[in-house]
Length: 138
Length: 153
Image 1 (cartoon, each protein chain N blue to C red):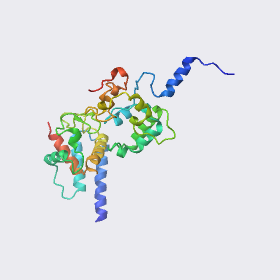
Image 2: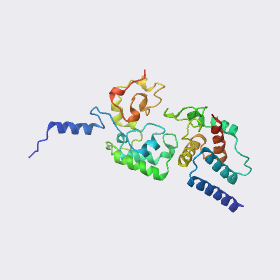
Image 3: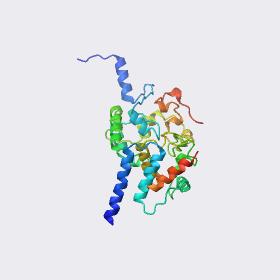
Image 4: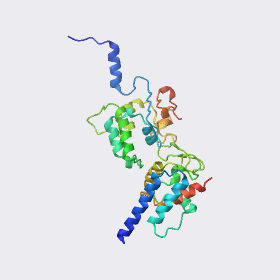
């Protein structure tokens, strides 16, 4: 049982690596990769939800910051870094075509920001929920 | 036998010894794609010359908790940024002390800003001493000359 779950996680990671290596370049590519990883790593995964993503985006998760602390509650608008005040270009792909276009950037910012907001890595489901929400913002 | 050096040379040496750019020119052009991309996405590209190499090493060693924020980098990118910082770092003026991790704690910074009234630092638009651009209009381009300073009132 233990070995099975490890190998399933391994396949999920491998699938992500291949997706990244293949150059996921549209938000939909990232959504597909998160979907694949969520199916392989999370039992009972029932698909992404933009509404859940919106709640996640605006929640401080019982800590100091939310995603919205820097990106504002409107991800189509320019944000400001909570510590330095430096402007942050809009996060919603509809408002900024550079978002969710490069795997290295997506990986880096989810890693850093999930750690800052939640104190841990985000699950594939959380990433997919948030991206679904961001894609719903016009 | 003493060799005679022209007074201008002594003057120039005194300026170098006094600190970075104290002669009046406060331009610090920073042009490195990795440094710009990785460090200047959250804050302005601080001039590498304002800290010695061992300070930058201390900063780079703690990027997972970088002044309260996760600024971790891919090892290959971190190595590239470190190379740039080493090549452009300032002189170590306090070799006996633990390396300063904040430019704002260096004696040079404190001296340069000793005329700034306390109320200016407390302005909401300043937010922190690390927010150079709150007063230095050309900070993003490395221009810290006094002509470009606008103190928020």
